[in-house]
Length: 153
Image (cartoon, rainbow, N blue to C red; front, side, top):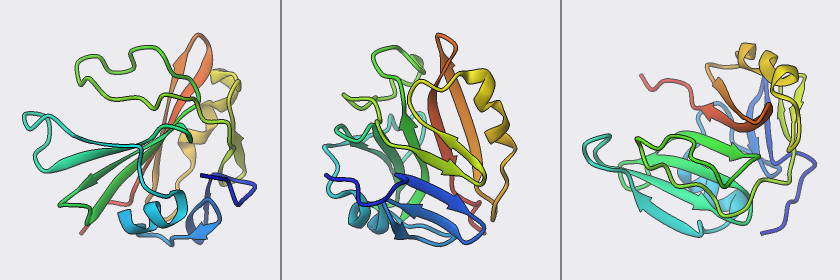
C-alpha cells in the first residue's frame, strides 16, 4: 500500500482522515480498508478479553485496528512507531511486522518514528470530537499512538 497523503492519520476538528480519505467523526472499518487496503492479518481477540473483536494488522504500514461485530464497529487505530518488543504481553497483542514510517497529525502536534516520548506527551491532551489519544513509550521514544474512536451512544 502506498501513502497518498502527507499524513497517514490526520485528526482535526473535522474528524479523522486516513491516508487522505476523510472519515469524519465516526469512522467505520470499511473506511479503514478503503484507505489502507486489505489487512495483512486478521486475528481474533481472546474471547476472555473481548468477545466478537478482531485485530486487523497492516504489517507494511505499522498499523493495527480493533474492530467489532464482523467489521461493523471501529474501536481504535494504533500506529506502531517501534516494533519488536512486548507492548502488552498479558494480552498477547499482535504487532505489525514493520514500524510505521509515516507521520500522524493530531491537532497541532505531529508524531513520527524517533520522536522523544517527553516531546510527545502533549498529544494526549488533544480532544477533538470525542477522539481519545493514548501514547506509549519504549526506550524514551514514542512507541505507539492509539486513537480511540468517540464513544458509541
